[in-house]
Amino acid sequence: MMDFAERDLRALWHPFTQMSEWMDGRPVIIERGEGNYLIDTEGRRYFDGISSMWVNLHGHDHPRIRAAIHEQLDRLAHSTLLGLAHGPSIDLATRLIEIAPSGLTRVFFSDNGSTAVEIALKMAFQFWQQREDRASRARTRFVALKGAYHGDTLGAVAVGGVEAFHEIFRPLVFEALRAENAYCYRCPYGLRHPDCGIHCLESLEGILESQGSEVAAVIVEPLVQAAAGMLLLPDGWLRRVRELCDRHGTLLIVDEVATGFGRTGCMFACEHEAVTPDLMAVAKGMSAGFLPLAATLTSEKLFEGFLGPVRDHAQFFHGHSYTGNALGCAATLASLDVFAEEDVLKHVQEMSTYLAQRLEALRRLPAVGDIRQRGLMVGIELVQDRTTRERFDPGERIGALVCMAIRKQGVILRPLADTIVLMPPLSVQRGEIDHLVDALVKCIAQVTGE
Image (tube, one colour):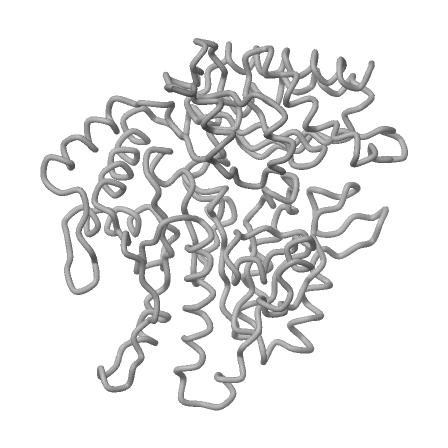
């Protein structure tokens, strides 16, 4: 019988992977997880430096969460929410409302981040179309940031700013209004900088001033544009966006898929600026990396816009077979218990401070052009010339080479082009941070020939 590697090469199609290149190598086959580590079929241990694509929170096989899943499995694995209800989904919806920004009062479950965003877009669109006045029904457009990433389903692709996606799927996606990215190398921490004079909200303000009456919603990632390269949005920016949306009567959708559940040091990134959106998408770390689960939280005002006689067909037209899966809900409830029992947010804040101190070791490397950090979300941008910010030739794939080299040091990372992403589990310890940073220093120097 063929081994796993051979069968992988014959049967699997991997996401975001050029399979011709993949089939020239021998894949690492992960067999099990222990704490913050992954172990392959050869017995090699790897520190999970990207939390298994940003989903793992408390380490692999956390006993509290595993026990909750087993306990739920003895009662019910899954039952639809279409025409029925069950305890785990009700309990979790109640808990989410308790910890979410004040004013979010309703929870619609789904399966992953893309669908959570898709649902938010559809809710916003249908909300306006069901209003009685013609002016409200004219609100059919969405505003998003350049460089944004909100997922891979077609609506999420439309509001995302990945040009390659738009070129490929152009006939299938609607055209969003695109505001300038607020990140600036020269003023990453202020809404106006005396040297460049750029007001980080001018583009968004201009769009809403000229076309605000057509806008159903503005969608943004709070504080950090994660897949864009861990770009930090200016302090106060999100609060100003909320004010602009209120001024122009449009809805605000916040995509907390990457930033939610403790990554930035608060349960949700919105809390840093005391902002309540009209809709909030959460996923990834929601079930602490155990099972696929996502949710879209909304305000009571938006929920009430879908109430009416059955004959009016005003119900929200969306649903999934596995919506509110009982096992996923049980895992998430247990994860929320872990947050409280283990004082996770305090630990994240302490480890974020320590990680920031250790990352200073990277600044002596000429190829490190920028280090961007918010909590335990980090982007390390590699450049050919730090003074001019000249980038490496994309064909050299420097970021990928660094991430391949660091595997030999017992660390799993994945780049965003030439930005190395660090997003360790929230349960990361000081010694693991030391190993991660020391290995990264060594591998960046090795790959860039320093």
